[in-house]
Structures are given as C-alpha cells and as structure tokens.
Length: 307
Ligand code: CP
Ligand code: NVA
Image (cartoon, rainbow, N blue to C red; front, top):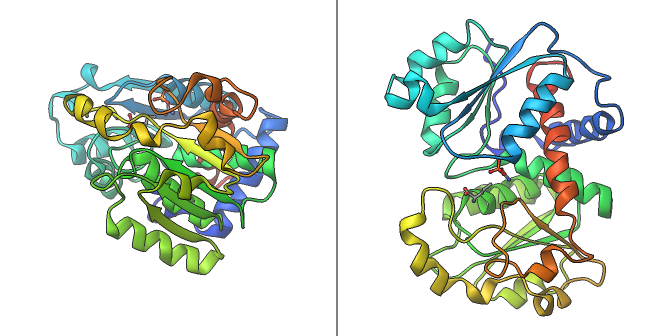
C-alpha cells in the first residue's frame, strides 16, 4: 500500500485537514492521551538549521510514545551525496516515518517515491506545510472556524511560506491575499492550484503588489523573513525591494479591528516586521510556535493511520 505522505499542504483534503486540526486541539488539551508510536522510531533529518521544527518534532514524537532520531545532514552519507533513493530504502526498514527539512522540493518527492513509510516535509525551498497546520490551529483558537476569514501575507510572495499559505489556507476555506512586489510573487502554477482549491472550499486568492490593499479588513496579518535560508547572496537586493511590505502598526491599523498578527519565526525585527507589532498585543506568535508540536503530532497520527 502506498504510504500517506505530507509534502505539500494540498496533500490533505479539506475534510482531512479539518480532522487533523481537531485532533491537534485534543492533543493540546491532553498531550500524552494518544500514543501510536510506542516502541517505534521516527527519523527527523535536517539539511538546514532549525529551532522550532526540531524541538517540536522531538518533543512531539516522544509524547506520542515514540523515539525521535534526529539526524543532521552533515553527519550522514545523505549529506555527502548518497542517493536519496538508497537512503529511503534504508530508513524505511527501521522507522515508522521520515520527517525531512531540505532544499529543493524534488528531494522530498524523491524520498517519498522510494519510501515505504510516510514522508513529512519539515520545510523545503518551496513549501512549509507543517507550519501552516500550526498557523491554522492558532487561527482557530483565536478567531474560530477559519472558513470565510481573510489572511493577508506580506513580503516574499514566492517563498515556501507564501506557497503554503496559498494552498493550506485555501484548503481551510480562507480568503488568501498575498501582498508582494513584482518579481517576488507566487508562481502561476501554485496560484492556479490554490484557486482550484478555493473554488471548492468557498475561499479565494488575491495577489497584489499593494500592501495596503492586501491587509485592508484582514482578520489575520502575517509575514516571513525577506531572505530565506539559502538566499543570503540576495540579501542586499531583497532589503531594497521589500521595505514597503514591512508589517508596521500603521499597516496593521488597516486590518480588521480585532486582527491577529502571525509570523512563523525566526523574525528580523525592524525588517519584515516592527518590534512593537511582533511583541505587541495582537501578536499570537508564541501560541503559533507552540502549536507546531500539537499540529505535527496530529499529522503524524493521521499519516500513520492512527487518526
Ligand atoms: N518556523 C520554523 O520552521 O522555525 P525553525 O526554522 O526554527 O524550525
Ligand atoms: N522562509 C523561511 C522560513 C523559515 C521557517 C526560510 O525558508 O528560511
């Protein structure tokens, strides 16, 4: 039987996503109530740095009764070029699932192609779907059912977070607005996928280069670093292009009166978001960071057939 992978946000149908999010809430209330991983190990591989993803998967897998095997790329043969297909067929003889943070998205799809156990994307250059599950859990906690709510993302509209907001929030029936400058807007293929999902869920998609139009009346305002991991060489040019998209108090004032502010973190205060917004009363970033654990535990239960 083909294992259930989670590589992009739209690997979950709207109903499946709702089921995972409902379980995430249950697991937050009772963290060790479900333990499908007793006596089993999950491999968690990192080709890029991480704080939140590493901590939340390591603690979460432990709470599910399992053992998290954290592997840093540099210390494995995968890191020096052993084929992904061979690695997949080694790991799946030992572990219940493989969680991987890497660069090119094709690397996780290749691992999944050869793996007999579920593969979970813990961030690639193109998608960060675990983060969006945590964001949706946070939105539900603060604003109720996400369907019909408007989320505005400002900044790099072509990065992993923007793509995942488009797909994951459209799946949840949200109106997704991306405010990003020309040259940094999402690929037409991702927009088309999000539009197809939104047509089914009652959501919508708007891509604009006008930051005020993006946030006006929004229920959720969110952003991400202007320079993602691996893009350091482009840092200087990006810092010239993105300042109009900085999340400031003035910009947030154009959102709904009770709008919440999110950021996947790590954040660069004074760049993509001002400190008084990130650390201000509308910010729900610490809940968002905590929810990584609950949402990922629910997802692991789902892909392992235990939800
Ligand atoms: N948001 C997020 O994925 O954080 P880390 O890079 O610290 O894992
Ligand atoms: N877009 C960011 C997200 C970090 C969690 C990056 O890829 O570096």
